[in-house]
Image (cartoon, rainbow, N blue to C red; front, side, top):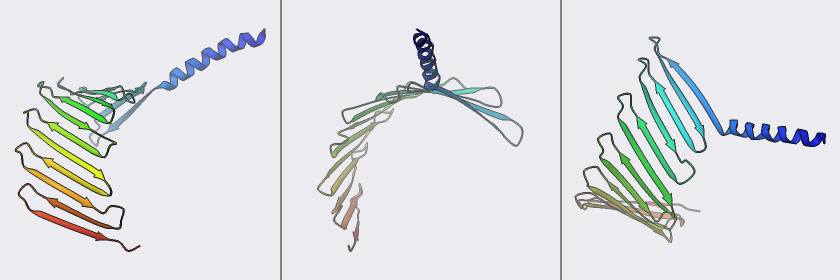
Length: 187
């Protein structure tokens, strides 16, 4: 009988203790040479991070991150003037999609496909709609990358012989200029 009376309070204590450990708050204060202070408070727990920075004039800036460890992460930064920037990132199946929205509502995006396959494509689109792409293929000790700018110009980088001790890297710029570097290692 006495054993049962201790089990329930012990279980409640364990659950309470694990809840306390799941969320932590830290505060740091820095004082400048003129005596003014800046305070930073960060709370972490359950994949979320909330940070508030308070300046010497009492104005605050905040950063909130949710969903860490889930593959879908959202971050919001609010400046002391109230303007907000958000970033939303989704990861899954070797793909990453990110969208950044500025205080004026304009967006920039970055899409990466094929991570972990050896053939990775990345596309960045700016708020003005212009796009830059990067395509990379890996295999057999070789790496080929092509970057295409918003005006259609391309730059390439080719690396051969990785893992053999004799590596050659060739870069070609958008105007056709080429640079080659060869490294030989004696084993």
